[in-house]
Image (tube, rainbow, N blue to C red; front, side, top):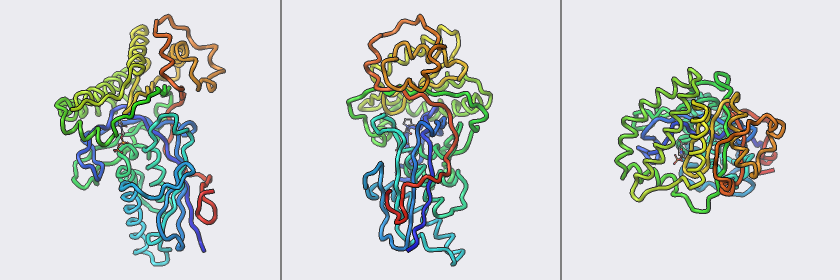
Length: 385
Ligand code: 2P0
């Protein structure tokens, strides 16, 4: 029997202009456009292999070594779209093997532990959709593929590009214009670095979809956010990226994180994603910027307490100097061991116990989009290795 395989990797992205709110839950259409920075896949990525064969009776999925099966409606929707596009190719060329009628096996792994506390649905769905698109030899461009990934998880559409990425909300009811586009490639502004403070959290967060739906239905502030705040900020942030203006970029990034958490708090019942440690980190970054007399570091928080701090490479000694002073006890600093001697000491006063609320630091930077890879997670039979 012939088994056909293909593999792809996809990066994690962290939004600097947040997606929060759906206007269509099934198609994952957002109530506002968003912007993100793609992170380096050496530190954070999903690798996915896809395999198909006339002998595969059904679709199947293995995640991080465990057989999960194809359960979620969203995964089913992605596979259905990909098979439909493959069928178009087969209808046009009868010599092609009928992949669209065969089962597909998907094997996926993250290079970071789930315990790192980072959501992986964006990289996960982007890699899944890409691996199958590659297996099926689909000719569609990344923006087209991003619409399929979007149905898996909204933020996944942004993981199909590297550098600075926008998800244009679109207006069409069928979602055909709701897609990711590149704002600027890594090379345009390669100095962007990110320090992720993984904040320990024992409470269960409000699930994302429930949270978003609740905000859309109950928050008055949310209406102001999507109508007045985000459309203007979307243009301003794109301009700041084009002009490599960190002060404006950082200011907008922090404001938008706070605006997103404000509409969460304004929901009924209120949704809390930040905890006390998160709030301490927010204050610390403001103190740093105040002391510098300009914005050299910018925090952003997603649907959980982890802090992502963006800064430019030439300010690393100041930014990491301060973070290291108060969080040197947490794992993750090895990578910059050779740079520690240059870290600038800080006289900013801060809670010396705050590190107890942080489980690790991930030091990373901006990175390119999905990569082709020869690494495969499936064997010749199309099963996990
Ligand atoms: C973002 N978040 O823009 C925002 C900020 C969380 C806070 O996108 O339901 O996993 O799969 O479309 O994409 C996380 O939401 O939600 C997210 P679904 P998704 O990154």
